[in-house]
Length: 187
Image 1 (cartoon, rainbow, N blue to C red):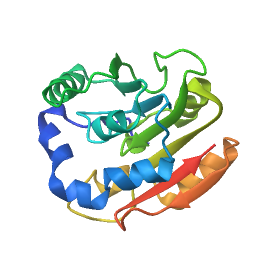
Image 2 (cartoon, rainbow, N blue to C red):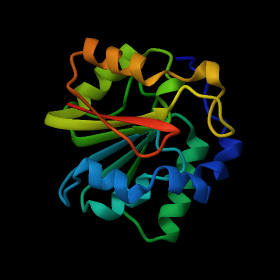
Image 3 (cartoon, one colour):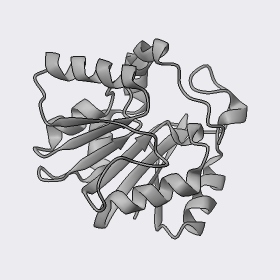
């Protein structure tokens, strides 16, 4: 939990085909059991690796939340090219999310947990924006040395994250997309 942020000048890395093999968007959508009428928040949306597939799946709003305006602009351009118009762009950090209380059915946060400096506050905010009965999918890097992702000392081990989520009062179910990452469905 370093608070160290991804450099938006490296945004093209987020759309690398290798990333789609590690984290297939269709598997993420299946894991979320996303319905056509669900309102979704992509927390740390970046340039839309998951936001665009999520927006295609649901006919309702997908909130693309990111602290970096450059990333949101890249996402806006990609969505326009693909004629996707159900994304709302929200410049915000995750410790004070600029969304109304209980406004989303599903939240997702992929590969940003290790960048958040105040995880308890961020999870309090996530809980605040979720509707009763809502759920979130949290994905981050395994704490192992590899060429992709943040340095090892910035990663949060899966077991540490599981314990943290339990202490925050979440029900936790672990899912596996790839050996390089871990994922938890929380409610």
